[in-house]
Image 1 (cartoon, rainbow, N blue to C red):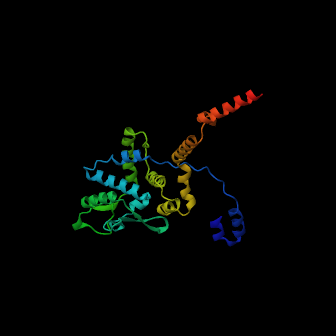
Image 2 (tube, rainbow, N blue to C red; image 1 turned 90 degrees about the vertical axis):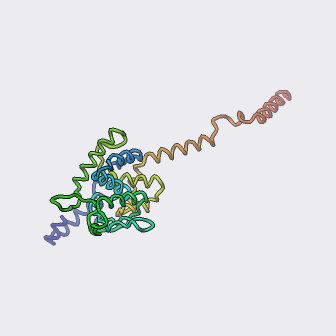
Image 3 (cartoon, rainbow, N blue to C red; image 1 turned 60 degrees about the vertical axis):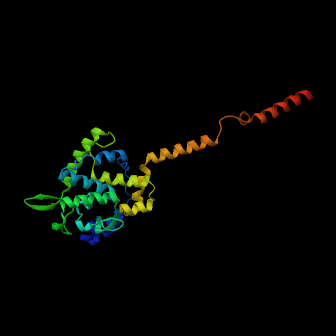
Length: 258
């Protein structure tokens, strides 16, 4: 109807009436994320003794650390990284050409430096080269999302055989969800997490608060423990012998007086 209104202004009133119809609320799918143990197992799968293994490993480590979307990872160039400053950063170009700078952990920065030494040696390094690439007919091309999906499927399958907490098939977006959940669990405020994830609204980030049943369980356990420590299930007179004796003596005195 929006297109019809643009094509024929006479349909404008009908189009506005259609837009006023309330949308049916769909049940939101729960956020699927990996445990920290599962992430460690998955990241250890690529063999870093080979060039391909090093590339795949660096891709996954960087994707997890930055919580980047798959398209943002594929669009990274060498000049997207600033590893020489006190706080290393990665420049990500998100939806609608929005740019954000994401801080990198020191270990991640060291890992990326090692990758650059192998795949982008200093003498032949160009700032606008694709960070992750494949070679075809002697030319470098930006790595494809199909390639990423292929090696993620391979590593998640082998990781699942070692650790049941790893999904049989891990997707790039699950890396993003996982990083967000881990940051939330470790105390990152919701507003800051929303900016880190480049969400259009805070409501989009609230899914992590709703989905984190583990935090709810721990909170309930802590609350129950506090109640058990402060509330005694025994009558007060059973915890104070002196008071009990005084009450008993008083009771005997009343009987005697009668």
